[in-house]
Image (tube, rainbow, N blue to C red; front, top):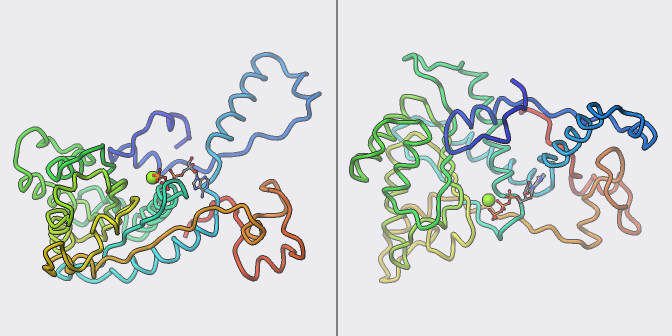
Length: 301
Ligand SMILES: Nc1ncnc2c1ncn2[C@@H]1O[C@H](COP(=O)(O)OP(=O)(O)OP(=O)(O)O)[C@@H](O)[C@H]1O
Ligand SMILES: [Mg+2]
């Protein structure tokens, strides 16, 4: 599979997800001197410029310290959730300020997880269905729980998205997840869900149902999830009903990118990924002993 057409994919459908997962690593256009660029014919120059545009628009994901730390935690949690489907699995909430790369990091992780599952178990389930280890649901603004359930169905292009109650949609989604052996359910921008009451009991209960009934590890991504009550143990009335979901959910944060001496230590100092120099008194060797420098994430776990 090539990287052609990736500009027209949507991760809201499983076909788009497959294109994303199967796309090969991009190759960097060879660096040409100004003289050589000027000497190119018009067609060659256009092609070279297009390849440079695409390369720069799609850099990464870089193995930033934030990404590396998040992946370590996610592998630990997902791998320790390998128990049988009768046991409720722990969930993860990635809760951080806007913009540090939550979505980018989670998608990079999910891509590797998807590939690993297919490599280990094959593309088909024992019943002959497509194996689909990851389902990713992106929410639109002001989504209700019924729309959320419908979004899960739309990922699988299920025909039954027009009519039905929220409970029916949830049951159909359960069929899809169990048939396709989904193991990771990513809910991006969770804070778009309509929080009907300040304590979020309804949403908490819905995700408890999913954690109990679906054989998946839930990964919530969003901003201010703790503030909205997703991880609380008691609701506004002092009822401990929220603790059932809250205690099962591990909260992971992401540090913001700072431009100070300590942060610069984690920036690479050489190679094509060269960024400005290390802080004073700091060498690449000493830096690498304390943190991992950012590099393109090309490895497959
Ligand atoms: N590890 C990375 N390597 C390369 N680019 C990255 C990396 N992390 C983030 N970016 C870039 O930073 C921008 C913001 O990233 P992203 O959308 O993942 O952040 P976010 O935390 O999910 O933001 P939001 O809270 O708005 O959803 C994007 O353009 C993304 O390509
Ligand atoms: Mg995001």
